[in-house]
Amino acid sequence: MAQLPPCPQCSSEYTYEDGVQLVCPECGHEWSEAEAAAAEAGAVVRDSNGNELQDGDTVTVIKDLKVKGSSSVVKVGTKVKNIRLVDGDHDIDCKIEGIGAMKLKSEFVKKA
Image (cartoon, rainbow, N blue to C red):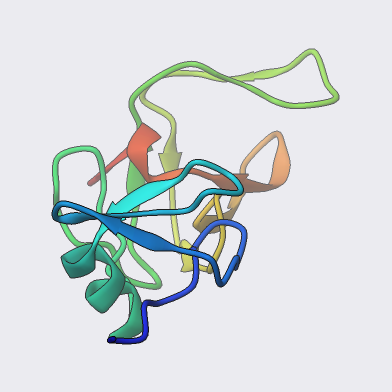
């Protein structure tokens, strides 16, 4: 029997196959083997339009984003320069003028 990869969300070793999907019984996360292979090879971060992002790129925010723990909002159309890509749920580290250091999800930005 082939060794299945651990769950990418909770790192559980009890994953199993369900058709073409891999399933984690502990957290319920489902993913394909192709996604697992891409994650092992180094995940590519893409914007909302599917363009590949790299460190140092300039992006534009496509949705009003509330700043957690504050009453301020990052408005649609805000340009963010010199981004850094990081691992995790929020995959962009940046500094937004007037707000400061923030972490953004790549699904809420587009490459400028």
